[in-house]
Each structure stands twice: as structure tokens, then as C-alpha cells.
Image (cartoon, rainbow, N blue to C red):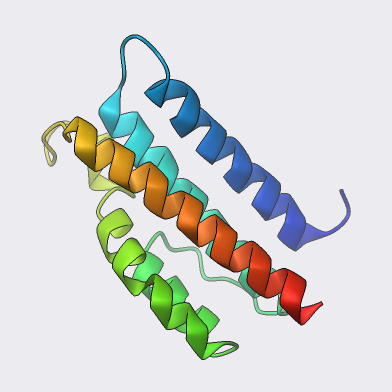
Length: 129
């Protein structure tokens, strides 16, 4: 691939696949599903920014990334609820001192929200092409 934005989308798709594979497994690491859902969302937003010619900041905060995306397209505001929920799964969930194990419903919700972000971002890129 020689399109950096689409390379980010490819990596994001891998994060979603990781979450999906885990959800389909016998033993499910729920924190991992939530983390990869957050990571996918982060990469879709950063990929969009790259396509728009914007250098993305080296942050994990989905709400800040969302605000940057809104500078190009106000309709990104519709992703706020998803980003708000997923934002909590970016850093602290990886460490035992700061987070308790999420419930199955939390993991399924995180995966579902990340897929909705994917659909939205890819449609916006397609519509703007």
C-alpha cells in the first residue's frame, strides 16, 4: 500500500478482526476486545485526518481526534457517543492497577461501536473522493 491513510484503515481492520476473533472464542479476554475496539476507532480517525492532509497528534484521546475530524466535516459529531464510551478503553484498561474487567455486554458494545465508526469514516472518505 502506498496510501498512508488507507494503511491506517488496514491496521484498524486488523484491530476489529482481533476483537471479533476474541468474541468468537471459547475463552474471551473482554479487556482485549475493548482495547482493540478503541484502537480500531483511533486508527480510523487518524487515517481520516491523514487523508485530509492533517498530521495527527500522537494521542489516544478519541474525543480530541473527533474534534480534529470535525474541522473537515461537522457530521463527525454523530460519533461522539461512540468515542466517549471507547475513549476509556485506550490506556488504563491495559493495566491491572486502574481497571476492573469489563462485562461481556461492554465488550460487545465496544466492538459494535468501533464497527459503526468504521462504516461512517469509510463512507465519508468514499463520498469525498
